[in-house]
Length: 506
Image (cartoon, rainbow, N blue to C red):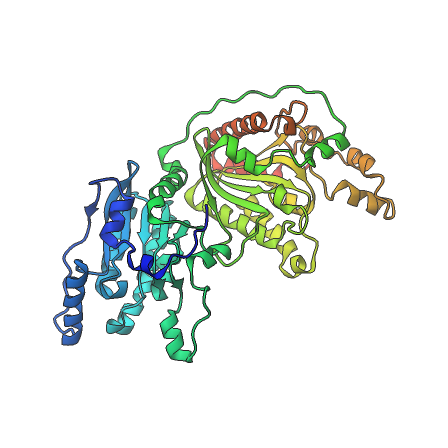
């Protein structure tokens, strides 16, 4: 998903209000309001009562948030939309009551939830009682997510304070409006407190996306498409999974280990991007950890293969060559995907294709070894069905981090090794890397060797090698992947996990 440039101030002034946004995002005439008339306490300060009346006159709304249900491309969803023209979209007790009520109703009705905040945060006229509503709203969102229901967030201009620090930051998928001011402390407040302006360019949707805090930056007109694709995947468990047919295994001529390794190092060999391009639908890339880190070496994607939805963690070999090897941040992105799959009860697909994890000062200080260990622990304990794809290169701990799964499928020329063969040769032969080919043969790294050991369950053919048939190979792998997922889904979690933990006891 692209990151648009920041729009000029005039465009910011013309951003859609709450009702306009509902018209843009929801199917025509599908919205039904859930809002009840607001009842105010009788002892409100007269000045605040006047502010409320003026806000209602200005905005045409009775509070700073509208709630209800509608449909996006025919799928019913619950919606929470801020009306910024009502006291800067601030959240007081009445607004919080409305939000919590809508979230709980969405949970009870089993509906996915789309939130579109635009708010200055807590309503200062109501003080601390309004401030603590963050807790109530967060609890309701947590219960909705715990019920396995998707939660999508669209951060509009501006979203700051307690709104950004609660329901604005808890989405399974989070998208920002182009050029939107999004941050914890509003820049005007910062300048008033510290007598200097806040650094420019920090509190923008684009900067948050660049730093892995949100998944994309998109204009409102593109929301129906991204929301529909995301819900096709995230809501897949509740709609059931299709039966998938795929070609069975076939006997292929054996190739020596070094030839396979050389094939997997060809620049033209298809990787995770080609697998998604040729074999997947409803692809929704997610960015970063959601906590300020990203790594281009790993793709975190929502997708469907032959109609079967999944969360995919894909090592992107093409970006790891040269100065951007797979680092600890990539594995933290992977762990975000594992959590997503577990929470929404979706199959997890891990795609291994790496020349090796980073060997650097930054990687060591960033906790690479610990992240490998935590990935292994998370995958072994993951309740969701898991399929691992050995797509090409499988070198070292970076590959091992994504290996534990219920089923492991491998491309014909894929391989898995403790180190690149040159590294193994250097260890065994006193620094001499010229024995790499014989080391690869001796270590049993080939897909066919792994199949005989039970490390791999199924091999997908390559005719001669995948670089010669990129699209056909990717579609073949996608069909096998979908079939494996569709079979796993019907098996009890206890049965699957018992095998997952014990399969390497040779």
